[in-house]
Amino acid sequence: MKELDTIGETGLRFFGKVSASISHEIKNTLAVINENAGLLEDLTLMAEKGMELDPTRVRGLAKKILAQVQRSDGIVKNLNRFAHSIDETGKRVDVEETINFTALLAARLASGRDVTFTTISPEKPIHILTRPFFLKALIFRCLEIAMAAPDADKTIYLKPETNEAKIQIRLTGMDLKEAWNEGGFPTEEDRALLDFLEADIEVNSTKGEIVLILTYMEKRSSLSGSPAAAFRENG
Amino acid sequence: MTEKVLLVDDEVEFVEPLAERMRARGMDVSTTTSPTDALSKAEKENYDAIVLDLMMPEMDGLQTLEAIKKKNPDIQVILLTGHATVEKGIEAMKHGAMDFLEKPVDIKSLAERIHKAQARKMVLVEKKNEEKIRNIILNKSW
Image (cartoon, rainbow over all chains, first blue to last red):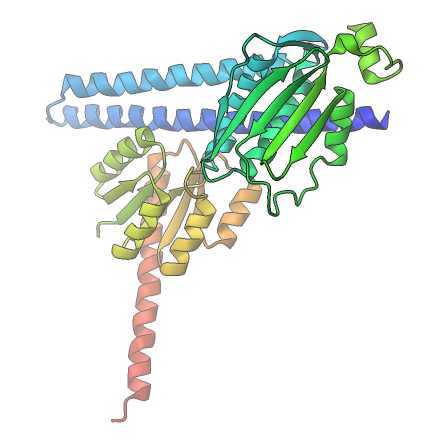
């Protein structure tokens, strides 16, 4: 029960972080719309006082506003998609797509640190039966660690890999040699999330690499009574 | 008196129209999308106010604020952000910000804040000048 409480808190924290970041992005687009619309208003006020109004200028400002409306729409669509991922208690997902979407959710936080994410596509699509929301929470947590300790290139590479028994998400491009882990990653909360998803994490400080190891849900037969087993039974 | 302002925000689509609107209201406005450039501009020019975005890729707004205040404690800095929380506001004030405004901002309230910033800076400069004169009078052997 305590484990489920911890997972619930971790999930809420993840949801809060992403929502706050998205609300900031929306605020930024609104600010651009506000200034360009305000400038249009200024120009029309000046035109009323006799200043010549250049139609090309007006069209240019209208285009900028429309572009920001499109940008806001994209942000809200992502928020909607993210919010609905919590409805899916169990679903087969494309791992690369999940990585890309989570990286997109973390992109604004990463850009604050001048860090970018690049996904290396697998040869064939990799699918996993999982709890999509919590898998995103786990990947997001790894991205947070990665973006706080990038190497000089400031690009974090994300590579999904697979063999018959497991799926791995390899994060490279970090400098993990010195004081990167003051927070004690993986924390107790991270461990609870890893257990919940029956996943594991390996950190290689020398290589600057974090590997997230996910077990195929279908391969888990000895997990009766575990959250994963409950998930298998209840869908 | 014309207010001399520096606008710092990594979003060019935001900073340019805002600067144009401020110029139309009689202010002398420069812009930059880089905090590092803002630091060098703040060193060379005598701004009344710097309007600074809190979250930029190159350097955090609070770090930039701290660096600006270190070099020129009289410059009044107004933080403008889409990331407004009470905690961030308190932190900004602790770092020496004059004000903390949320995006999207009303141009009238921004202009008022800039006007106040100019007045505040003038008081600080006058005080410093008075002190200088007093020191000269006290230390000079007449």
